[in-house]
Image (cartoon, rainbow, N blue to C red; front, top):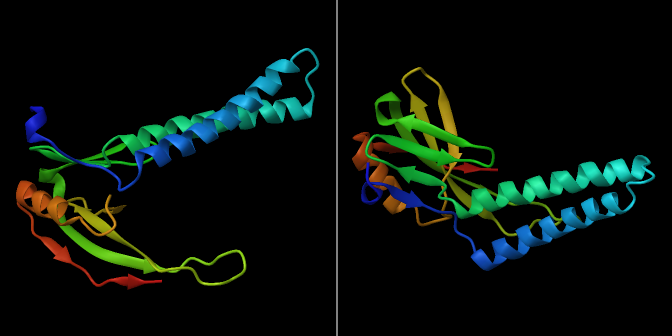
Length: 167
């Protein structure tokens, strides 16, 4: 398989925003670890908390950086790869029974119980020949047509348009 035969689709985001957000989380975690190592001669419960929380924040920063800057979906000649925060799901086209897509929209609440703007995301349902259904959020908010057309062409399975969900 060559690189030209693989199509990659990334999340819609600002790389500068990713660097800032991940850097801020990583800096906060590193500061907590530095505070732990500064007081290593007399360890108490607060220092253990700083060690655990600082390590957790650094791990979160690495996971977010890896997730956001790698392609979310890849279409190869023989399989569909979908990356989530903790790993990679791989579906060979031969194992896929059907594909469906729908739009899910919701209005999150703010802290004062006021409704915010409506958010709409497209989701892909992959039904395997074993009968399992897997639901994945598509990478772009509105411009997923190229991904869906290419997936339908490569897998030779038509993508069914399902009813939208409004929460």
